[in-house]
Length: 403
Image (tube, rainbow, N blue to C red; front, side, top):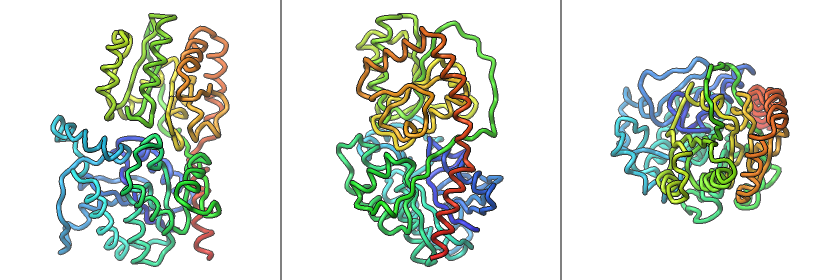
C-alpha cells in the first residue's frame, strides 16, 4: 500500500499538535507496511525522515521548468485569520525562524498547484490530506490521479474561533474538502458532531480515529524543585482557554500563595495574558516560558505537579496523553475529544474556574488522589499507541480501494 499524504508540518518543522500527530500516524502506518510519501509546503532542502519519503513542495520544483509565484510569509494554521493578520510582528521579531508565507491563502493555492505535479510523478494508491490548509492540494491530486481522497480533520473553524467570527473563506475550503473527499476522518466524536451539524456531511461518510501518543522517545529527567507547579502547555489562543487558566490560578493563589503556574506556548493572546496577570496581582507566581520543543517539553511535563487543559473547543488534545505518560495528573476540559477516551483524570467545564481551582487544590493537597491519578494515568495511556489509529486508517484505505 502506497499513500500520498499532504500535511502542513512535519517534525522537525512544526509548531504544534498537527506535526506531532502526522509524525505519530505515519510511524504507525510504517508498522503496518504502508509506504507514505509525505508532502509539506516548505522546509530545508536536506530534510529527511526515517519512516516516510519526505518531500518539500517548494524544493520539488527547483530542477524543473515549472515556476510558481514566490511568496514570503509565516503561516499560522491554527490561528484565526484575524489573529494571523495581527501577529505579523512575529516576523519582524524573528525573521530567521519564518517557515511560511505572508499571505496564507496564496501559500495554500501555491501548495495546491504543486500538488498536481506531485500527483503526476509519484506512485500511490490513495491520497490523505491533513486539515484545511491541505484540502485543496488533496482535491487537485485526486483530479489528476483519479485515486480516492481521505481528508483528516484535526480542527475546524468552529474550534479555532470558539464558535464565533467564523472566517467564511476558511469554512468554504473545509466544506469543499469534506464533500469532495471519499472519506472524512475526525479525531473524535466531538469533532464528528461538528462536521455533520455544521458542514452538512453524512454521518456514514465520517469515521472517528482518535489520536495517540509516541512512546519511542521516553526519557526520565532528574528535576529538583521545591515549589508546587501547575502547567499550561499549548497555543495561547482563544481555543485553548488560557484566560480561564489565569482566572483559576488567581483563585488557587487566594488559598495558597506559594503555588507556581507555568504557561508554555505562544500565540496571539500572550500579551493580553501577561497584562491580565499583572492586573490580577499574581505576576510573581506566573512564568511565561514561551514556545518549547523536544526535551524541553518533556522536562516541563515532568517538572509539573498538575497539567491543566482548559480548552474552549478541543477536537482531541494530545498534550494530556503526553502529560500522563510523564506521570503528571491532568485536569481536562469536557469540551475535548480526549475526554471521550480517558478515565483517569479530572474533567471540568472550561468556563467553570471555581471547579478548575478546586480540582487543582484537591490534587495539591490530597496525596492519595494525586498518587492514584499519576499511577493509573501512566497505565491507561499505554493503550494509546499510534499503531491502533494507523490500523484504523489502513482499514479505511482498503475499504475505499475495494469500491
